[in-house]
Length: 148
Image (cartoon, rainbow, N blue to C red; front, side):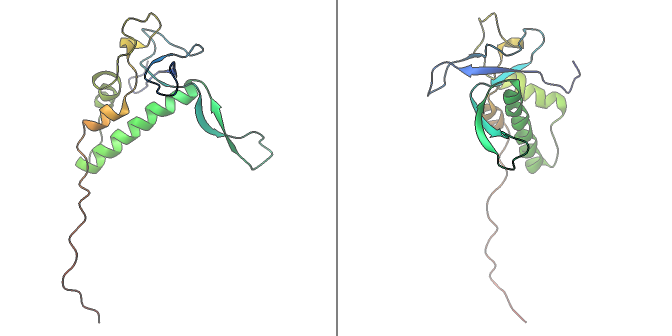
């Protein structure tokens, strides 16, 4: 694998509606040496174009790694935006992968034979919580305004 690539497996919820128990989706690619992380990828609501000749689009529940990968890339974008807004620098690829794949990912697949590398599953909230929040304090109100 190229160092800046993250291979993603799809998971599915096993206990609707709470979805606290996930497993690798039956049709997902996976591998303890080839896939880095798992993310939700079954029964994901998404925009869907039913007919390319019609301008009307709709929503549909879709499955696959094409649904899981945007969860990971979206989390990576959120991490980079937070880092940039607080330090005016981006995370390195190495640091980004460390936050997404190792340090702050969940490990629900510890004893499962079918799992991604290290049995990790995306936890964006944990990864985001490690970076400082930007200062959102509003500036003070002006006290001396004149109009000419």
